[in-house]
Image (cartoon, rainbow, N blue to C red):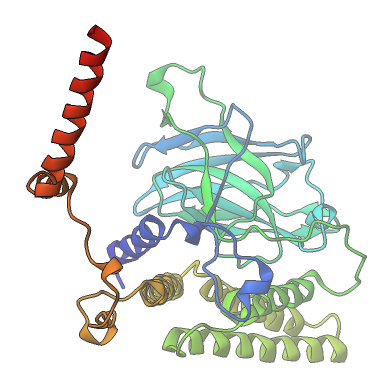
Length: 385
């Protein structure tokens, strides 16, 4: 299904049925699948900067500053354009003031660096890991030429969409330099991104001695199991992509079981991280499919919702038409004729003008008038004598 068709289905649903945008009470949901909500977020700080990097130009120094969640955090990096990609280099020791992500809640176990395009599409660049509570620098690439950078707290390294917890954002350190020395151009625009992932538990988490990779795998499978069609069931007939989503979750659980067994057999073995990261990756794929972050599941959910609302409207119109009185033209429903032997009082009364004409043409009327005239004449004559 094309993006144009998806946009048309969403537009039609919201235009014809505005109630689709309203949340549905829990008692009315049952096991129906509801489309996930696409949310928009962005840093509230005003000094963030979108940069467009000159193709094959020299490297540009960029600084990422901490938001109010981590005001002491800071990352210093270099961005350079290469043939076919842009390289982002964080040298060792250039990440300061960053603490483990578990401080932000029980669903957060790591950090992910994102390149965000001008239109709000965030691309996962890689994970910032820790060794003895110290962050490890990374070197990554992106196909984007114009973007801004952010670091978010996440439940696992393989997330498709970012969480709402922005920890650092990019600011341009070369803003005061002459134009001739700049290798990146400032782009006017708001720093924003879109995500399907906004429902996270931010309560404090108890300490767990298991490896972080295993904790991420457990959390990834847990979140996928509660997401979209995997948590609420499917509306309508089963489709290939929904079957694929359930199969992905099953595979993720299988790899998690291998990781748990490897941890039990040898807690320090490399198999623990290997199977754990595989489980997290597959579980994240299942979660993204279930929520509509990738694939066509969201479009089909909207199409089913539009059809359901159309059926409800048709049923309501049918019920309303059945409640109205039937037309008189229908012989079967016409009122019965009046009996022929009804009394004369039920006949139509004559009009007033017709009644007066009928009285004036009768002889008795004129005799009465003449008598009254003679009586009046005799009365006046007697008074005059």
